[in-house]
Image (tube, rainbow, N blue to C red; front, side):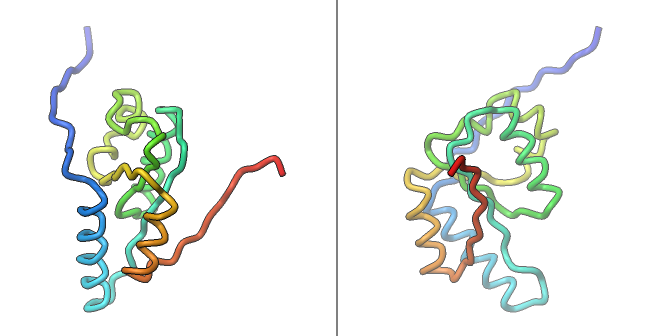
Amino acid sequence: ARGAIACGKVPTAYDEEWLNKYVRRKSEQTSSSSTSPIRILALDKIDDTANLGSIIRSAAAFGIHVIILSDDSCDVWYRRCVRVSMGHALTVPSVRVSDLSSTIINLRKEHNVMSYAAVIDKD
């Protein structure tokens, strides 16, 4: 027989306040050194846990520092998401926000974060 079981506590400290402090700290680090700027991935309405796990795994591979999720996205800590992410859901912090667009606007205003978008739409 094979298998594994684990138990852990889901982090609850990752909120918008934490995000602002994190971005401020990373911005200060990058301005004082030659490291690359902070990379943030913002996701809206992701409703499939396997897709989210795959996105998290890819984000880790591309050096994303933090993931921002809209409030109507699925749960990062759902077991299928953690499994598909190959554990990267544990290493890349994710923040759930109530209003994704205003969060992105605030990041631009307060921290000069540039945003780029890709939208899949029928129109």
